[in-house]
Length: 267
Image: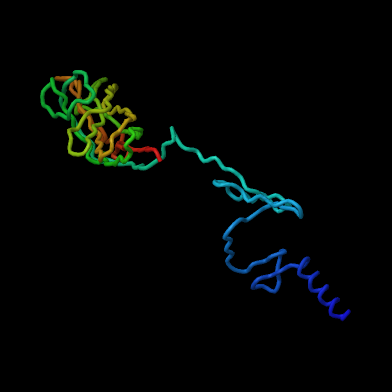
């Protein structure tokens, strides 16, 4: 009987203090599981003989910070909500490598936001021409009018003359038109600029706008440019927007236009 008690004591001692392996004969830790582990309730950390370990709270993550005892713990991680609790729902960049060329003076009248898309050959009405590659479509699903769309357009404008003999200038404008569903196209952003210098001079053009309080629906955005004062007679210049008019100084790769659309909505 004494022998049996001694054997039981040895086995119990082994179970309490030795390493236990599941599907392994060489366990590396107190409990070594060679396979999947399914925990149905709590996984507590840093407990003692008299105190239960922490099971964490909802939303916390298990942080492994080192190999020392009691180093791993549950932590609350703050994830950035974005601007005003908005998140990206769409991000895209379009590229236009065709551009548009003008060879006559157009309207120099001011532009009115929310006005329609017009074409013209006179000097009283804006002559808008789209950069065909810079058109994009996005959807708004938010019904709280907190959605935003950030539009960034960049292109290059160059002036040139067939028989250059001095300094010249040419003015133009570029804008962004927005259409909701099958509705009309409306001008939502516009900026004018002037290129000055000898034939072949050019300038980088940037236009940024944020559209806010957007209603649900499908939106189409397009970039377009218009000729303004290109001079007259011996002072008339050719103007290229998004395309070169003098390949001596630049090429199509340098002139291409890009438009980036970023949409943010509540989540």
